[in-house]
Amino acid sequence: MKARTRTNAAAGVLLTPFFVLFTLVTVVPIGYAVWLSLFTEKQSGLGFGGTETVFSGLGNYTAALGDPAFREGFAVLLGYCVLYIPLMIGGALALALLLDSTLARARRFFQLALFLPHAVPGIIAALIWVYLYTPQLSPVVDAMEAGGVGFDFFAPEGALPSVINIALWEWLGYNMVIFYAALQAVDRSVLEAATVDGAGSWRVAFSIKVPLIRASVVMVALFTVIGSLQLFTEPLIVSKGTGSSVTSTWTPNMYAYTAAFDRGDYGLAAAASVLLALTAALLSFAVTRFTGRKGKKA
Image 1: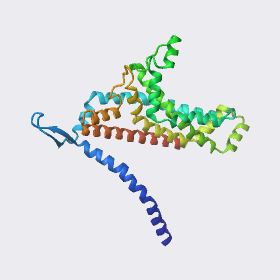
Image 2: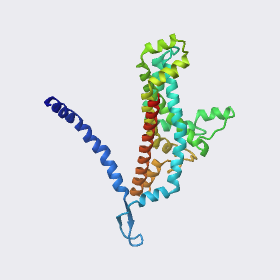
Image 3: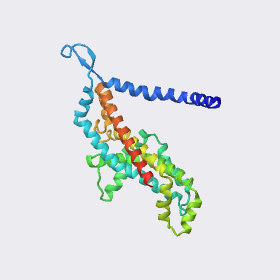
Image 4: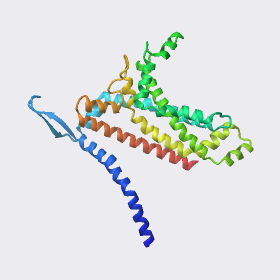
């Protein structure tokens, strides 16, 4: 009994710093955002008096949900997720399987080459690609036009693919490294047994390797969903491009940023942020439940 008490006490001591930091950097900011979303500022005296903070209840939430710009931001985010998430997970997994195959050569070089873009800060990466998207500046656009291929990366039909391309360039190598590390931990005797039984390379890859690294795939999928909902840096930089169709409210995060720092409406910005956080929590729960059920069936 004393040993168990000492063990619980030691665990409590070791976990205390984590819970303190978690409370300070996560619980308190979320609580403050929820509290801030319940208030709004109003001017008295027909706009000539000072401003006062008044309780509005769910007024900021109804204002955000009733704003077409906020709803359109979620529509853009939905299109982004539908295209980006499969490309990211599928592309990273394909590259990892390719590097793990017996046919791969110069693995260390390609690992470094594919991971290197992730080492570039997101703002710098977005600026690089905005330069490559800009006509009369980009050698890529000039080469495309010389070949008779015309594509406006800043047009309404090109803005979403442009942002997806930047995000893929930044994160594909990072997720590939996670998958590759998981593949390296797979027992090679299992793969050798499958090969002896007559399984080809494709069968080994998708019937043996992928199921064995399912936990890593689920983790990457979960983080990719959460990261997709936080889309902000790439479209913000792309919006500075010449003639860009990306507006200041193109995504929910940009909507909250504009509401807070351009319009000074912190209550509305907090409400938009809380709604986005709730969406991320619900989608994360859905991903974990869906993958959990798939795992039990497997």
